[in-house]
Image (cartoon, rainbow, N blue to C red):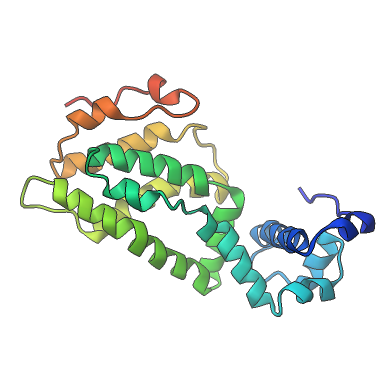
Length: 229
């Protein structure tokens, strides 16, 4: 739903930082709806500002898309996740569950999923750069932690991690791109995916099954039927 454009008086009261943030937020909503081929002329109409005002803050449409990329993708990556993944005082099963709970809460949104889809279809660099960044910062370290915990000769490879990651992210794709009915609570699906992964590599999870943290809404307790081994 398109929000009402701010009045001229409201726009005059905005500081430069607030006005820039308003443009980025409006561009995020606009491009997630129409795709990256949308133009700044139409965006300016939706925002109730002149096209020249947009270009006062962003010299090109590419610069504006870069700001959207940072707001939608980079700014949602928690600085705590690398330390969480590397914390060997906690079982890897526990760390993976916590990471994917927090990660999905951060990215499962209409804007994230649809801009990512449109970027991929357009052959744009945004999602490619994001995947490279996430792989280097989060997924490769996650693989190393799983490999360290795997007792047998068979160790997870990056393709295995991408299969785990992609399966979890597909829940959001179904919801926001295909717009098909999905459970409101994705926690059971996340726990099942991580459980299957540790099973495949014989990674012990008895301790993890006892230490899985509760979700803010208490659903973890209601879903405390983590696979018992």
